[in-house]
Amino acid sequence: MGSMSIWHWVIVLVVVVLLFGTKKLGNVGSDIGKAVKGFKDGVKGEEEKPASTAANPAQPTQQVADKSTIDVETREKHRS
Image 1 (tube, rainbow, N blue to C red):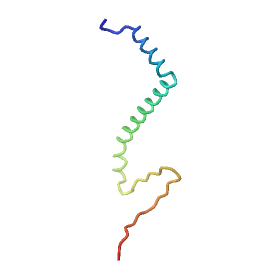
Image 2: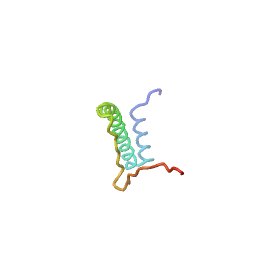
Image 3: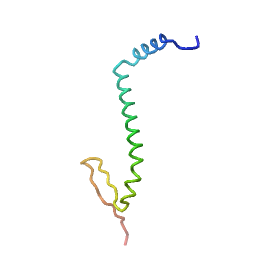
Image 4: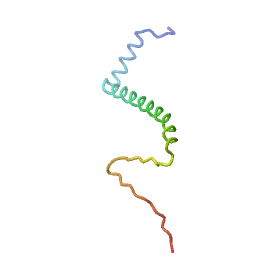
């Protein structure tokens, strides 16, 4: 009675599939996989990042969001 048999897990699985549906469960699994992959890439990129910035610290890094982004410079306005 204390341990769960295979039949308990089968019944739980059937109830979960009936509640959420196979399509939604597939999407959840896909989303979790993408999140894990993104996390691994982020950790790997963060480990490589200090080595690449130490090689050339004088050059600033630029990020481009998309082609509709406009790059502008800001200047302070002085009153005379």
